[in-house]
Image (cartoon, rainbow, N blue to C red; front, side, top):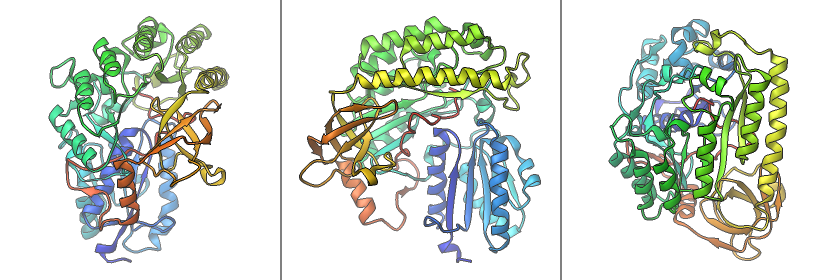
Length: 499
């Protein structure tokens, strides 16, 4: 067993972007307490599960993973296991009862307590369960071990005030609580000073920002304020709610040069009947009207969405309405979910649960339609010249193909050939490429990149990967350096699907 100063950790993350960002904070807390990240392939002394309560069979997957660790822990004196996140908030004592070898259970409101709880469990030799019912402090004040040198998540709010019948997130993360605009902008400026050139504003219902501080235009003002930050090249946000998608937000997007021409806006269903049953506060006409306004203001914007198939009571006619919206909206991609019961949600008790075979058949039709549209929309990109922000880990086949990968301004994934001469761009640098081929989920630029712009972000990536500090990427509290993990490819789920 390692001495405490050398103890290693591993954080395993399940679920949405909020969990990904929370895991960066958990890593920062552990490194601040003297732990170091376990090398790949090595068993960690502390394993932390950051759980999701929304995904199907989330509890079974957790207990399966915990079961696999039980013999490893028995053979490794001093090893500790902690479970946090939404499932921990929901199941509490159940986790220790079903997996008594777990040392710590903590909730969504007290992630800052993890190092203390681990130490208390070690000293007292018994499981520590601490679940708070409301937020202790805004989590952005916690240390953060960011995963990227060039792009960062920035939380602007936590919690959600909506009551969608399929979603348990508000019960687990609480009512919406907004950060002060000055604190958000100070964090972004600190990130930019460290080399970050892309930020993603993050909230459970990101464009409702301002409801907690009494300013209905706070989100559009925040976007415009981001436009005034020198050195910040790309601004994105996720995930908005159609109810709060007002004209001032569209204007701010279109008029702020560093706000990217990309929008992820959950639809969930195209049927007004189902939207009402879901307690979604908009209808098909309103949703398509927003899409129309966005396209008028930003003709080349790429729009993506979330869709649930087979919600209780969904008829073939209801489903056809969803297909109608998909055809009209022409999404660049869609994250699609088959409805399944989530314990604790009103929808789980509704009449009219749709048979699995029917849900599957509808889901297959939706996927086929969206694949066709995604491909057609990507084909329109052929011949365009775009500036790609070179990414780390986006192209799974880059090594075999000798290509690089990154995201265009509209967030489309682009694989490209490096320049014919000179050094290859680093993650965080940008490359100017011309699209020559389109597939449903990616674009390809086969000719060598026409130009490479070396950036402060690329410099930051190089520093991190050549001269790592004693505690890489960790700063105490806000401001801190940062980055989201690579944006999921369109074939995977964007998050919990609850926005």
